[in-house]
Length: 424
Image (cartoon, rainbow, N blue to C red):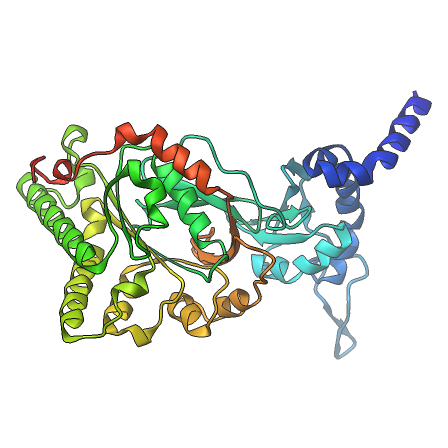
């Protein structure tokens, strides 16, 4: 029996390097996790002692004659740790906090744990009082492009990719109704839009596009778009119709005595509308006085949709290579309505500040650290706890996006069906 076990261990040790390269998840299940489990259990007491997580049985001060002496306990009690549990690409272990301890102490010790356990990273979080959850990632989840998500989700939800802790990066327009996505050429911005559209295309929603590159980007999804504007004049007209749709839905809700379309009976709920904008900066560039009037019209329509759309089933997904305050106050006002933010690698600091600067200054440093050879990596808001985190979008090719749009073209409603009364 022992001989057979030894042969198995030797075989795993021989194939381990090759298996890790070819199929890291299988390697982790067979080799990586058992070894990490031993290291976690073996090193826990020493880690807890060195990082100040253990507590003494008795107070650290004692009375010696008439003198109070402060010392260090010889046998402190380590925090009680549960058995590490396997998860895809990592492990999870729960620890019970000593009285007086807070999860921040474990966050400070996370880097030491990662080195001791020989894993890529360890993150500490608390989802219940008195315990902390330690999540270890065996490797960087963002080091490889992930395959697109193909499961079913709730209405207006889409899995954009993976967070850097290995969790699914979910974009839910019911929770965060409007999004701003910025990124330089070949940074992954268009791939993210394609991934989102490919998933929303399977749902009973309407999508309209505004693409001032002459439709080169969003025309791939043409069969699934209820309307597509390819210049600013068409965009102004389309946005005007969307404002009319929004006002009609407002009247419908007022007549029914509800505050949003989601409070209406399901048969009476109008089709949700997702407005996808590519190269938003082109909408705000002016050269003549006529351009200024058109820009003002577009800007006003955007603001009204941003302010009213969340409760009325109209959502904005605005993307661009460059979005700066130099484009005018309309852009800054629109930015305030777009609570969801995704920032890929950008060419200028001003765009990163426009996307993230008003939310968290530390996120700017993370954006500037994104390298050219990691397309699809971005800094986004919406991670657990409501803060920011690095993420990587799923890889969806133009051919895959186009095929999905054609396959679900039968779900595309006409513009007239988006009004409250069902007619234009």
